[in-house]
Image (cartoon, rainbow, N blue to C red):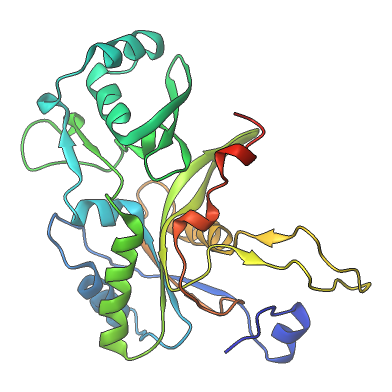
Length: 270
């Protein structure tokens, strides 16, 4: 097992590095599919098995599809509040109704955009509801949208337990989604659920190269991994929603999404 703080010198000395391996040929996921079994089958097709310290990174979309988080907009009856926000944003009021049902608070709105605090605690556009690469069992494809998993931490924990039992080793499972960021253009992969790996690594008290003790440094380790894995997955037609991460430079431990969410009373921008 790696020490609590694995320095670059440690990694070089032990000839270690982080490898991100996209698993090719992952099948299209349907509601009710067993993701752990699909991961195992795809690992075998790619010539891999899992070993201690590995992390399986899953795109949110396949988790949501397996958990049947599909909604057809024709079944949604928008409220008066949804119609009001739809008038401001120009969005379909049925979609706005779903956004409102998935969020705790509307943070900002403008034409074409709703920024909300998702019920899971993070700030996101449109409550993470997705239209791309989504279709359903009936009706028109453009009428289907996909919600985030109900409890991504629990989803990650269940998949991890199944994979650990199958491979008899200690693993981490990370569920990621593409998010925008304040003050920056473009989306980036970020954690929405995790099990068996740290979300946050606290380096306070560690010495730097000049023996200065770090006072405030905390690393969003799972988000850093999410960003790297997202590069390997792609965002359009790549069809690689699962990445095997090997060589993660921090010890595995139990964690949850909550450690990555800044408390509102510490948020200087709301």
